[in-house]
Length: 234
Image (cartoon, rainbow, N blue to C red):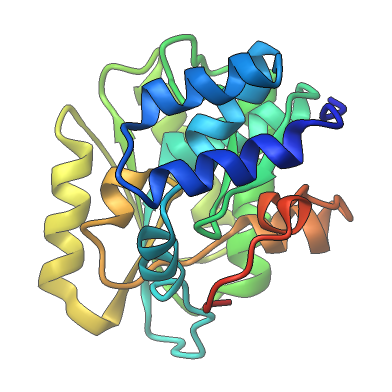
């Protein structure tokens, strides 16, 4: 997907509005209409642009852990949906808050198919390559199609690479993940790009820089660089 020439100014205008307390949805509509953005560009604005204080706070939580005893608490569908979006040729991007997202953002149409298998394999390869000595807990939403089959497949793949791991299927995934994280303290880190989880987490890990940039040699469009927005934080 090629972004329009006016997209950069749209990002900068929205960033200005959000930093002055304007509501997000109406601000995205206002900016989108002004610059005649397409539907996908508006989704990028909504999922990728946040006020400065939020961006700095979220970026401060991203770590590159050296602790081999770390336990990764993984928001399974969130991670797989983003990889599947890439595999299907859809837009992925790095938001102003530092996290990589897609323009789908929902798992209503998620299913366990050949794309999910490939995405799961990439995720497992990432674990093996970068966190082979870490513990892994994958949380899958019970309401997703064939979540039980997906859980069994991921358990099998974790066994194959000899990584100590759990795969949990539950209707209360987000709450369970955060509870496990807060109980585990500095020995755990959350793997997600879900803003609701990030804002409640203490430490996070970004898998997509490794998966896309290093493993797949894919350059991820960075909204901060596109719009040339500067603020402290990695």
